[in-house]
Length: 355
Image (cartoon, rainbow, N blue to C red):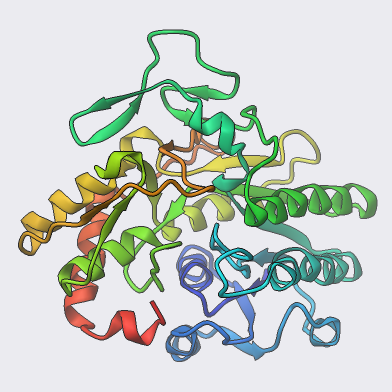
């Protein structure tokens, strides 16, 4: 089997490549990356040692896709992954749509030409911000928890958010590009007869991630805490009780491996994928973990309310467990310890990766 990975030198793309090669005999992986993200060059040499064939190119450029070798499957791990993209002054809204949506057509046209299957890595941020903010929550210790004592909205349970939850606007410019990408990918698959899988990912995290405050929060928080960089609890009374679930790209790769091995011609094609409630943690809980692992370092309270901030989002991966026998194997504490060891071994990691 031959697999092409877009964004192969990113944290997620590189870990997926490594993990798939460990899991499958006879697998050949090609990877394309424009090396624009600070830190991506670090992964280039590592991937070469695994036997990944690297191609320097940009999936936004149709001509860069034309001469790529044929593959059986394409995994799209290339995107601008920040929920603040297009509004934070770091990249324009036009650049966001070029990264996350316009480039998708080039990739799907490649799949059409080569009859290749397609895996799109989507995001939990396709869900409605007002609906997420309206969830019944209660503060328990240092974290918000879902209050299931009453009737919950459609698409949410104690395990987390599922596909049936609202995707009504506003969901952020970033979320809208990913939601649109999901629809376009599914339509291409139906129109031209190639399989499409979509994984709506929670917060991917692990050692070597190019963590920033607006994405890759687990890696950023641990590295910044260790370096005594200023940290802030923004919004929600400045107490850091907002919660996200974490899961490792190794676990995501296991799901993708199961999906590309499945010959199912129809049925469900879209799956929430994340750590679920068992692998969720608030910023305050993460700070307590870092205090114990390193030494105390207190974040500042910042009472500002920002338009895209949400108090709680945890992904329910029950559909993937039922259909593929897949579940998250890496607990959040193990992820944090992995990040911590990497942070200690790489004291300039935040500078190298442009955080």
